Image (cartoon, rainbow, N blue to C red; front, side, top):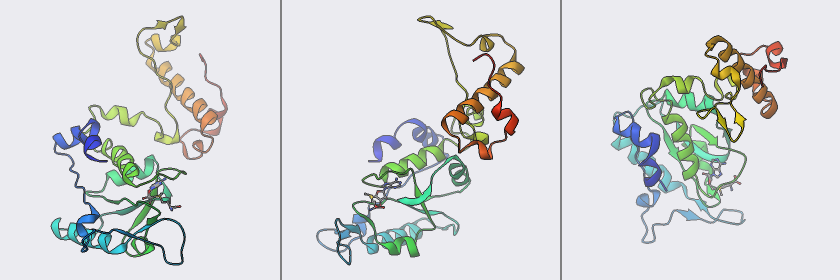
Length: 233
Ligand SMILES: C[S@@+](CC[C@H](N)C(=O)[O-])C[C@H]1O[C@@H](n2cnc3c(N)ncnc32)[C@H](O)[C@@H]1O
């Protein structure tokens, strides 16, 4: 689940630049029985199997011992559809940390004691249920990795994109200026950067209002700005 994604894209760049490293731990390596059992039936009955607490706690203790000096403030994040919803602000906060530990659940989930006595945070990547925490871990890792200074070629691309100031990004076009009769908005060809910035900000607001009415609440935009339609649509 991890080797292919971690070997490409931003992950490869970040590792090659020495800005970040990944360690994957298999909780089966922290079991003590012949079958390397990591799951068991839930007390009280019900469908499916739960990940047992012992291999997870023992894996954590091993990670702590082999990653010295252990930084006390390292977030220990349990991936779960019941956690707080992941967003760009959480990605920014996590990008400030020197290390992150992500616990991937599987099957019916994880014994509650992991949440109560080990995890310091519980994060969901959206209101849907996936079969395991591996893809959510990669989603979070990608969003965080690209925010680490030096990973992306241009810091500008991070500054201008969706969710900064609580707005979605404006529409963008590249060459050719006319394709199958569909032309690029004239303002973008004008060379007038002040007007282009104004147009982009208006478009961002218009788009945000149309698709994500929840976002402008914390945007830097004033209510008047948000109500004004964009020129040169
Ligand atoms: C099938 S899910 C378990 C769902 C659980 N029974 C429930 O209803 O909340 C198995 C694992 O996938 C991961 N997972 C599934 N959906 C997720 C989501 N939206 N965000 C983060 N992790 C998720 C979690 O690690 C979870 O323990």
